[in-house]
Amino acid sequence: MRVVIPPIKSQGIKTKLVPWIQALVPDVEGRWIEPFLGTGVVAFNVGFKRALLSDTNPHIVRFYRQIQRGMLCPARVRFYLEEEGERLRRSSRNGYDHFNAIKERFNRDHNPLDFLFLSRAGFNGMMRFNKKGEWNIPFCQKPERFSRSYVTKIVNQVRDVACLIQPEWVFLTASFEDVIRQATSGDIIYCDPPYAGRYVDYYNGWTEDDETHLFELLSSTQARFILSTWHHNDYRQNTMLERYWNRFNVVTRDHFYYSGGKLENRRSIVEALVFNFTAAIEKHNHGLELKPEQMLLLEERSRYITRQLSRP
Image (cartoon, rainbow, N blue to C red; front, side, top):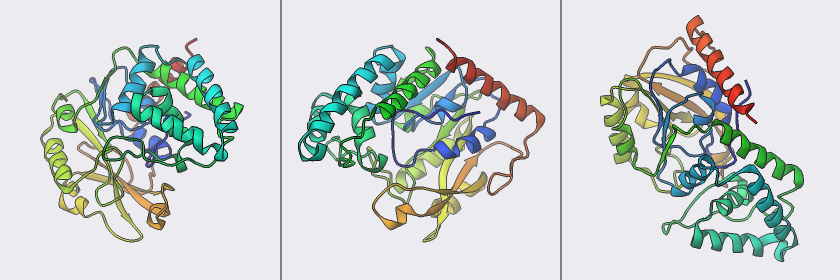
């Protein structure tokens, strides 16, 4: 099963970890709930017909809502990217002037197409906003960024997520507290918050108090949950695991992020998944030992996603 990659880019995207997360998702009758949607890569690959998806970043929510409502279609995306890509190529200062013009326009008008442009033309696929809520990532220094093949790749990604987003999916701009409180016993909550003790300047910050509050909410929820976090790197341990999360089930996997100028952010890291249910999975580096019913569930979800992607 191929991993559906969303059109929005961001540091810390879970694309390479999706199969690991997929294999852990239990059979539930309710909704897939994400209080920290981010790019949406996990939600698009778990095969749920009902979902509650939220992020405090209103630009992400607006982008996917417009796709859901048919306001942002592949043809419109292609026309926009070809037009703005050509302007970028012809722009003075090797594209800087046009990139800055798009950035200023986005900061003023919050157009989802400009958001997509900045996401794909920003440095190193990163997403960051300043305290005023304005885009704060510089140009990637590639005036030829939007080649025909690259535009087609993005357009196909928009088409894929348009096929997967269901009318029953609810997109919210809300706090993680409000979203988690909506979960019931039949739901599964997937949390991918900013990583405590790491670089967390994404749309708004993440503090130890936030981590404490998240722990309290997930400890008391009737729903099942999966939490993505980090275990350790070459420099230090994630102290929040010992303080809070080790009372639940924890599995780990080696991973590598390349997401910034600091050396620490370019090194390998051991990822962790924390969850509150039983699962037949090795504690480190995947080593799946799936039960037959879990394998059937994965195959069923894979077939569902394939059917959705095959829609005309």
